[in-house]
Length: 67
Image (tube, rainbow, N blue to C red; front, side, top):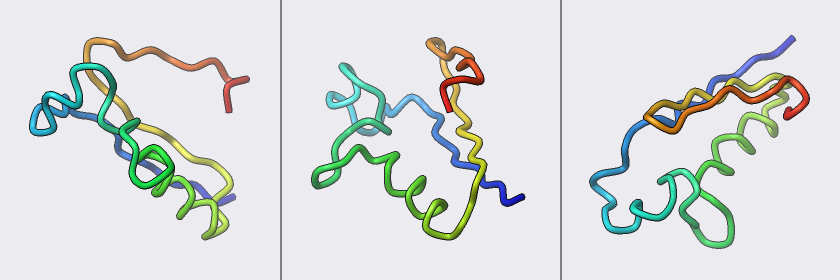
């Protein structure tokens, strides 16, 4: 089994005012959200399980069926 971790926490305060509306990891870089690139890199490397670590006041636990 291959496992990977993507750290996607923080408030994004340095990217204000862009992060007033959305999380910094969902901001577009070219035509995809920023979080796409590290996840795709892990997938391309053959990683089969990815843990996405988030934080902040709006965090929630995704159900197992989400992945």
